[in-house]
Length: 319
View 1: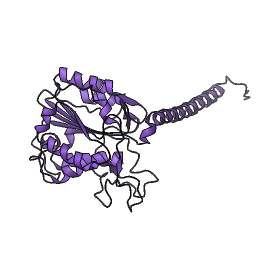
View 2 (view 1 turned 90 degrees about the horizontal axis):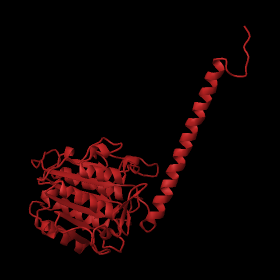
View 3 (view 1 turned 90 degrees about the vertical axis):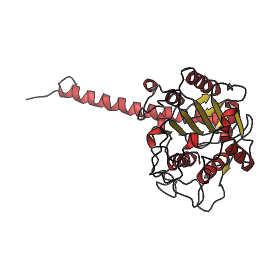
């Protein structure tokens, strides 16, 4: 459901005129072609809804989806990025930045496939961006359990950042479209579904961030949607961050100063976020060790064969 959320967000930005060169997407990308997916190569965010995987340009996937890369991309630090296509946010003091992140979380952290990003590290990165004049205004939508803990009492109100979170600092966010006839697990998350289905149909050049926030608060009845930071930004139009066009995505936006990041990682039970990350890290380490052992064995075998051919072994050769 997390990757479905991000695919949906990508299409929202494109359909509202944000060109693909202004969107950076991180996604673990192990769902669409997973052997357990009853719809190979396809991802859905709603029962019998639009197929969303097709057309999504993923810049960072698999083991390249890390907290270090995420922050480096945000801060425009290409030299600190490992893997992927090296694309980063190249912004200045006149730009609007929209960040959407969907994964699991716990108090003071959000999850990546093998690691965690802490509230302290995320807020430090946002403060550095502000000091270096990397944006005019930055809007961050965060889908995760206890997502409010990433900003509550931490994010300053005077650095031009406005955040909406799926839950407060101590409660879960919830899956959505879980009871469906497509033989799929929960197809989305309630907070994310609510803001995205609003963006799908509303004229975003007439709807403010405050209005979208209030709509999502009303519709999200399983958690308390919260907002933090510079609340004055909420008066701005949603279109300033998600795009102005209402035409098909073939229309190219005339809004060159908007950069967007969509983010997703592989999912696991939120209540066990820390344990699952540790377990997955151990599994990855075991895989790496097995691979390294196979490589070492192969090198040793080749070395012995070469040694024997050169006459350095125990075998004698008579002519």
